[in-house]
Structures are given as C-alpha cells and as structure tokens.
Image (cartoon, rainbow over all chains, first blue to last red):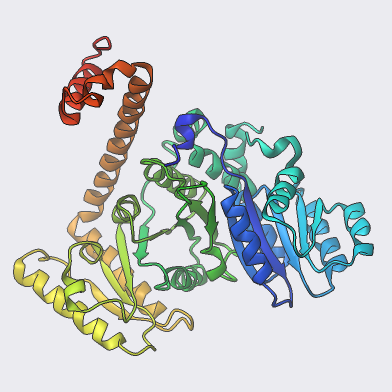
Length: 144
Length: 321
C-alpha cells in the first residue's frame, strides 16, 4: 500500500499528457506507452486520438502536466513538432515534448535541434520510455 | 517556485495554468495546501452547486459529463470538473482517462482536472473539498465531481455533493442486485445509460421497483429519484439529466436541505482531517515505539486490547509504554 504523499513528504508523481495530433489513427503504441508510464509510477493524462495543439495546451495548463508525449505515425512530425513548440512558446509554457512513433533517423537531429526533448522509436523498452520522460525533466524531475 | 499567494491572484484573474498549479499543491497536501486553504477561506462562498457523478466503470460517466458541461457552458455557466480515477496500489502510477471522453469542452469556459486517488488513506477525501473551494474562488460553478463507484472513499466523496447522480447500464444485474445495499441508495438522480442497448428497459423497471420498495419501507419519504434513459455517445437524454439535477436542487432549496448538506460536508471534512491527523500520530507512535507492539506480536495480548492501550496513551498524551 502506498503511503499518502503528504504524510511521507514524497514528491508527487510526474504527470504526463499523451496525445496524437490531427489525422492519425494509430494509437496502439500510445496505449502501450501509457501503460509503461503508469507502471513507472507516473500519472498519465490520456487524450488519445485527433487532438489539436489547442486541446493539448489546454490539458497541460489545467492538468499541470510536467511532460508532453506525442505519438506520430503520419509523417507529419516535422510540421506538427514545429506547431506544438510554437504554441508552447506563445503561451510561455516551459514543458518538455517527447515524440514517439515512426520517425526516420535523418529527421531526429532536426527535431532535437528545434527543441524536442527526445525521440522514441518502435521497440523502445519500458525502461527507455520512462527514462526519456525523467531525462526530459532534468533536475526538475523532483517536483517542488 | 512561484509563491501560492501570487498563483492565487493570477488564478482568480483567470490564468488557468496558475489554477492548475494550485490544484497540484492542494492535492499534494501538507503546509502549502494548508496555506492555500487559509488564503481561499472567506473568498469562496460555498454556495456553488456540487454535483457528484458515480457508477460502475464503463457506464458512461465521463461521456455524459462532457454533454452536461457542454449544456452548462451554453447557458452561460463556467463549470469545473474534478474527474477522479484510481492509482495503482503497486506503483502509484495512474492512467487518467476521463478527459478523453470530454472532447471539445475543455478549451472553452469549462475547466477539467483529472485527479488520481494516489492510494491516500483519506487523502482524496481531503484533496477534493480543497480543490472545489479553489474552483469556486476562481469563479467556477457548478462543480462536478466524477468518481468510480467502487471504494468507500470514492463513494463518500460523491455522497457529500448537493446532488448525486448514479449511473447504470443494462446487463449489470437483476432486481436482486438493484435491491442490494450500496450505491443506488445514495442516488438523487438515476441514469440508465446505453439506452439503445438491449435490456435497458429491464434495468429501468428493476430500478423503479427498487424505488417503490424504498417508499414502502419508509426509507425514502421526501424525494424519489427520477430515472433518466440516456445514450451518452450521442448525447440523447443529457438535457433531461440536467433538468432532473435542477429539479433536485430546487427541492433542496425549498426544503432547507441545501444548508443541511453544506453543514454535513463541513462536518465530514473536519472529521476526515482529524482522522488523518490521529492516524499519522498513531503511525509515528508505532514507528518510534516498537515495544508497543510486542505484547500483540508474541500473543500475550489481543491486537484489539493492544490498540485500546495505545489509543488511551495517545489521546491522553501519556509517555510511551
């Protein structure tokens, strides 16, 4: 039985918003990732399919999310990453974004250069996925 | 870290991120949460209607809430939703999957917050009223709390609402199930969702009979919950649910029960806090006085007698055994 966080002084669980943007129906991978993060002790706010940058931003604000995870299987990753990073910037939100899914190796550097924290490929292990989330927070992974 | 006082100013001014952060702080409990409670005190009137929605997993609670919230915002209200889902007892993680069913309503005037139960012994019971007061201070109302209808804490949280909506779906049991003690008894409004599925009318009939018996036995004298048939996926019936909720709230106001429920809520919250406080004290006592358990462990004394002895010492502030 987990102890109440307040009583033990433990930090709160990391909160992650998971979504797919736009017209992209392949959500099986994202569901697996949700389960991996749950089992790593994180709280997953699962938005699922056909989200927009606006709904993701609204969820991040209302849910006080620490990290955004976006799944992409529609070859739109470069355009969509640009859009979400711009939207976060416009709102003054400093929340790391991780992309997972089908991303050609030659696009990874471009995504990282524009500010994506990590790119996870098919076959990433549960440990790798959880580490990518914790790593994206750096020393913020211990919440205040 | 931004000071809670500044966060509250920004949240009251309409900044959603500040409210989101404050909700995390009250959820975490401890000194920061107590400080926020002090700041909010007097600012929230405690008059915003609290609507609890509960029922078995998969009955369509979140989907219906999405339609209700939609209706409330169209009529000019600024509803806020607290959607509670369970945490894993093994890892503390959670998949909060209510928001996905409330598609399209979160971007507008409504505010939706998902909350995990976090395995708190009473923690959820403390976090929910604190979060509701924050919502109200920031101008939100009505306030909707959605919980899965399993687990005493979840049911209690919903039960302290002004109006409790209990959702059912066809195929989940017969008349005997309907007459078992529990969830159905606390309903002010009953919803049979998935009305397009076979068996929905049977479920309705079983519920009507259950309510008839409540009247015969004298359990329910003043209010007979209306049974509304809905198909949450299409939104059919959501308007009637809203009307039934309003009818119940008018009934509460007419009969003075609104004030009684408000007082019951405050009583429950005080009790929950005292219980948590004493529980923490007892837990600390056992950790720092391992000898206190010895007689129970070696069989010289029953656990009950050991507990009575420790309770007496704790409450009278006597030194450890």
